Image 1 (cartoon, rainbow, N blue to C red):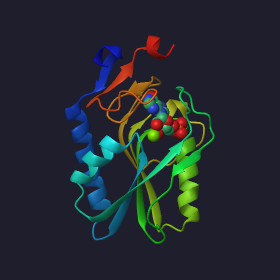
Image 2 (cartoon, rainbow, N blue to C red):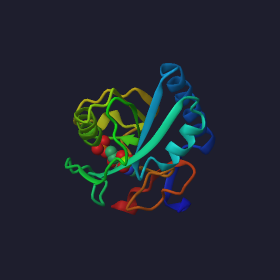
Image 3 (spheres, helix red, strand yellow):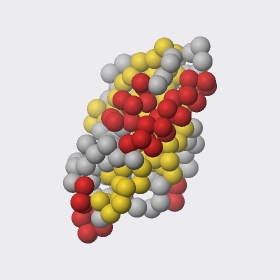
Length: 178
Ligand code: IMP
Ligand code: MG
């Protein structure tokens, strides 16, 4: 595992501090209100778990699983729902919890889907943002870190389903997916 990485981008400690910083902003923005955090599986699992530890609001969590990638490293642009929400979201304040925004196709789809379900408000929280690769414009409300155009894994992010267990985020050696 570890030897498949070219370099570490964010350590476990740096990620924890980012989760605390974002949670503090969410706590302030939604003071006195209720929030539902919707994690996008599977990449957001570690981030969701860390983020909600520092949330000091009345809140619930839910998960959706959508796919746009197949098994490669490039978005296909098509989004399929693999697992839907388990609770209705009408009139709820939704914070989407995502691992990384790349082309923006996934969140563009989810945003439209949630609006159609009459959420009261929808905001986006992502640990990583790769703005150089955007194909559709997305308003991101909470960001942990911007990353360059490199394929990253760890802390929930995968390549062909592996590396999600790493407690840090790093760049995969190109020869692994070449
Ligand atoms: P988008 O629809 O292109 O914005 O892609 C979003 C999804 O693609 C993310 O939720 C990730 O699951 C996956 N993804 C995008 N870039 C990376 C990466 O560098 N490493 C691992 N997964 C990625
Ligand atoms: Mg994802």
